[in-house]
Length: 492
Image 1 (tube, rainbow, N blue to C red):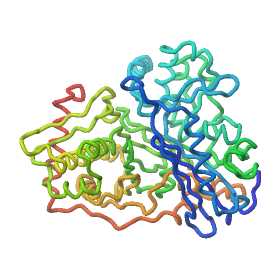
Image 2 (cartoon, rainbow, N blue to C red):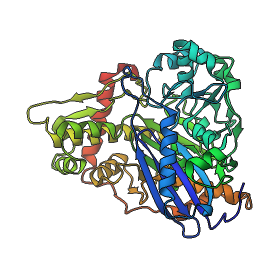
Image 3 (cartoon, helix red, strand yellow):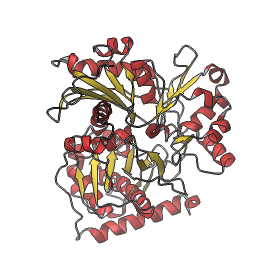
Image 4 (spheres, helix red, strand yellow):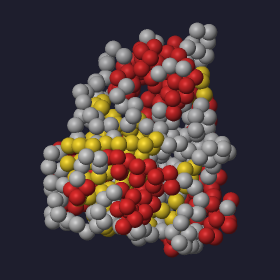
């Protein structure tokens, strides 16, 4: 691997998501992003409800396209490292020749709910539907011919790494979202693997540790990206782990809320945080610590549905929602359009409560969606606090983080200041920074990821809770929680 220019070269980060792939280039000497590119794509169409899948070839095409575009005007010989951020939990299954057996079932796929319940009953502990373990059991049960062909199981970012380097490996951060990983020991859990199938232990590639380099860019990877072979490729990680690096959650006390297709809340911890109820994922970080995380499956999705229904853009809908009082005059959206992970309701649907004449208007509906998602996130944040996570300030990332109305609603519901990040693509930035850190560690083994990341992280002005609005938002949270208890008595 080429190790030159570690402190002064260019570092390429990819974020391979559900809706598209983003790429950024960081100039280490300038301490800034110098180029960016993106490609959008969708899910496979025509599948039954609950089945949400993509073909891994879609990701590779997007990585190749964004990788070449982002390097236009730059000297490819200056690229000193690469890393990949990827959507978590997806199941990429390969045959003996390293070819994809079937499309990947994604984090948001709820068709495996029965298999998740079966594993939870057999193991005596929660197994979230979204995690990879239930997807493999589903494949074994529902597609035995495909299952018989499977030789290797990878996560989405692992697969992109495999295409770029020819090396199959996992790292602790993304692996801790599979369901067959013990976050306390930072190692695979053989009991869960065996509960799926005795072969799974042989299907999973070796585990690598944070800060290591995966290997050199292969000839195939070089051709895809238009780069010289041999560029160091870091381990990368799950999108939440990379977003943690790109948003400065590499030190205790920084809580990050990501507002994308899903919504996540996470914070770095020096110790593992295990929720007895299984609501907070006991993830490892990709910088050597832990990253307790809450994930809700519905964040921007309900907003997009209302945008399409109203035929108005988000800016116009936000302006209309500003004219609506807190609580929407009794209108409330329980926004579980694609089921929900927290609370654990994989087969739930969205519910609109309090409908009366005059309330089914764009501004009311949009504000009800903003408030419903915010209320669900606030309940999750309280769960993190109950487990000992300090919340002094919340940083907002993701596509919707710049919506100033939502910023205020979140600040009021959370009860702490919120700050949007200046750089919205925290996953791609985090990947580039992890590559920079991993390359520098070859000469500076004691260098912390936090020391590398912090100079690149810039936050906007704080939006503070409004004490005049606090009683109304407290009432909103009480109403929302009461609505959940009425709609889903099993939560009691």
